[in-house]
Each structure stands twice: as C-alpha cells, then as structure tokens.
Length: 211
Image 1 (tube, rainbow, N blue to C red):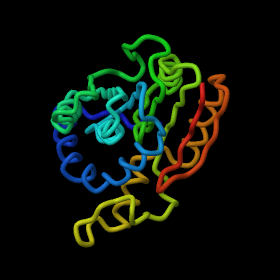
Image 2: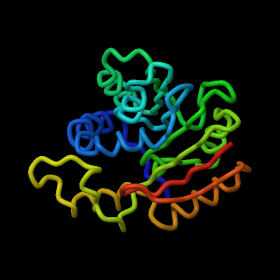
Image 3: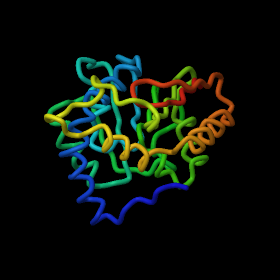
Image 4: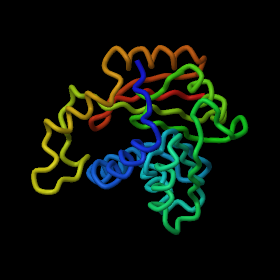
C-alpha cells in the first residue's frame, strides 16, 4: 500500500527537517547514485527529486548534461532551488509523476530514488517514465533494503549520529518491503522494455530497465 503524502502544511515542515537532517547524512549516497547513472551529457530526469541532490551531483562538472528534477511538493522544489544555487544546467519543477509535462523520448536517463512507496498509481507512473525515456535510455528505480548493512562510506555521521538502528528503522518505514519491491519489479517487466535487471548497490536494491 502506498504511503500517502502529507498535507502541504505538515509536508513543508517535514521537507525542511529532511533537508537539514537526513539529506545531509545521506549525501554520500546521493553522490554514488548520481555517479552510477553513467551519464555526462544529454538529459536526466529525477522523479520525486526531493531536495535535489541527485541532480546536483550528476550535473556537477558535466556542463553538457541537462538535469531536471520533479516533485509534487512545492516546498521540496523550493528547497531544491535553494540547493541548486548558481548551477545553470539544472531545472526543478513542481509536477506529478503520473502526468509528466515533457514530450515523448526526452530523457536519456530517468531515476527515482526512495520515492516509490508514495506512488498511488504505479502503473500510470511507470508508463509515464517509459514514455519520456528515449529509445536506448535507461530507467533506474531505487529502494532502501533494511536487510542490508549500513555501509560506512554511503552515509555521513556527526559523531555516532545517526546510529545504524535508527537508519534501518527509517528504511523499514520508507521502503516498499520485500513483496512490494518484487511487485514493482513485475510491473516494470510488464512494460515491454528490452532489458530489466535487479541488483543491490550500497544499502539500496534497484530495478534497472532499458527502453
């Protein structure tokens, strides 16, 4: 079952809290995810971009790469814009994932990190991701796996904070779970894409599909 989004007032507080806390200590993970996308030019779409760090890290040092981050939350987009600062090859837009306002075959890479648990209509969203991906482009969906150890080089700590137990509790709350991930994989396989694989990287499991 999808976890419903909070009303905008509570969501705003949650978004700012996330940017000041978890977004800080997950920054190494965002960097590694951005690097794993293996793209230095073309166009990248981050669906449910939150505070924008995947786009920001992917765009860094790659002036020929246009990065777009979309999020349903106006507050998250505002935070992402602040984090973007002067970077010119990044665009953040408030937008629903099931109605992406971009033409067919726009993006070389489409990524969604730790957002699938919010998808109320995953089939509609997956169809949109497929639609806006160019032929030969890659879709990658990331979900935290509470059964994995917390890799030291994937999170940043202040002293002993956050402890592993806290991190794993957060993963259990904000992930699809084993059956949910298997179901999402089956849905991706049903899109008729040319190649679908699953693997783990860091503390994430991911589905990667080529159009």
